[in-house]
Amino acid sequence: MVFAVAASFHVPLSTPSSSTFLFHGNMIAAVLLTMLGLPCLWFFWSALSLQANKAKAETTGLPLMVRWVTPTNPFWMMVGSSFVLKCRALGIGTKYFHRFYIFGWEANERHVVHQELGPAFMLVSPGGNWLCVSDASIFTDVIHRRTDFRRNMEQFAVLNVYGKNLSTTDDEEWQKHRKVTAITFTENNNKLVWEQSLLQTRGMLQYWLERQPVNTTNDDTKVFTLNVLAAAIFDKSYPFEGAAESKTHISTQNGFEYRDSLGKILKNIIPIFIFGEQGLKAWWTPHSWKSAGLAIDVFRSYVTGLINEEREHMDLGVQKNQHLVAALVCACESEQRENGHSAQRKRDMTLTEEEIISNLFVYAFAGNDTTAIALNHLLVDLAASPETQEWIAEEIRHYLPEDDLSQWPYKTFPHLKRCLAVVVGQ
Ligand code: HEM
Image 1 (cartoon, rainbow, N blue to C red):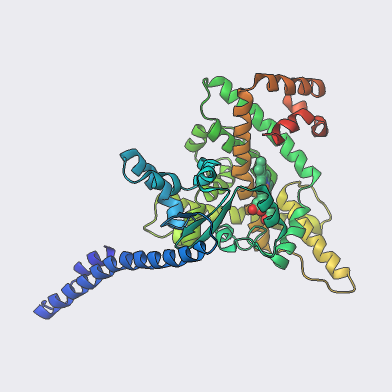
Image 2 (image 1 turned 180 degrees about the vertical axis):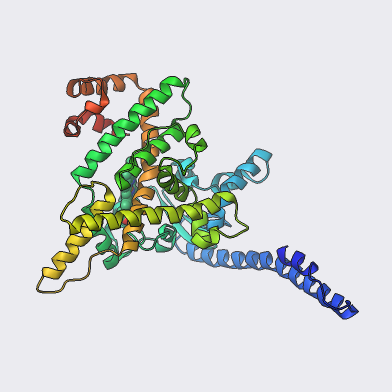
């Protein structure tokens, strides 16, 4: 469409001759044909690939679930669910389409799909086949055969916003990331998380008490988690605000831009993957994408500043920060020093500045939804189970008798066995 409009606005310098009009007419026809041809080509390519993949899947003898759209198609991940929900609301499409074309259909279906198709079936799509299993012995087998069943690097590439990291590498490269990142979760950092969680809890409780009935636990636990992660990653403390209030403040005020930049990147991870940082800033993109593009910059500059600050502290022989940036810089420097002192030069296991930023981003990505969803589940489960609330309250009153949460020391944490049981048992 853009090409057609541009062609019709082309103004010839001399008086237009009939051949100029003919030229324009041909060009518009060519553009229109290309525009029609591309979807047709895509359709035929999908049909052919689907047939080829179906033939492969049939050789397994397992039941098949056939989908015309690949589950990891980035465009479908971005708009597919809204499209399916709209179709469902308007009564367009089959029940099969409504059930299995939505993003995250597995979570909605749970065991039901296995009751219909059996404990193992093949999901067939133009972009590849997926083996779906519900049998614990098969899971164990897969987990133990790491070299046969490898990490899907294509799928994880979405997390390469700042370059390679723990989640997007394999084999020796993964070992390098693993070695340095594993030692960053120290007791000091856990203490920071404990204190920040108590601060956020106080804020969230106050917010809920003032706004009855509470029907925003889903959004509020996301704010809670993002605030704790911001504290753990770069030691920035934010007061708890309900999700509705968080949307209204201007993110450049009071240092909110660092936390909000993280939130924007996490929310727009699929457009970032498709268009890249520069592509998001193009003139035609919606405002939310442009601000996600800028957020990538803000997060990078802020963390780079912290890395430099930490290196200066190390040069002076002081270590005063307990956040994850400091821990990662420290781990890399000591790995480099160890390697430098060793008589036999070992494999380089340190991370570049880009890799440090990338791993910090992955902590935020991996820790955000997982924790928010677990917390939300936990709160809703507890609301439905007053006896369990009483059971853990008894333990908390015993070990932490003070009403003021800021007086609750981190060293009590290992004693809270009932609380831990409730978290693990969900
Ligand atoms: C209730 C909360 C959480 C749950 C249920 C959870 C669950 C998981 C699971 C199942 C994996 C393995 C994924 C795979 O290998 O395919 C994983 C990996 C990972 N998680 Fe978590 N997680 C939680 C919180 C966190 C937090 C708070 C952080 C960081 C601050 C974090 C950082 C990571 C990282 C970096 C990986 C990738 C490890 C690797 O690739 O070697 N997670 N998590």
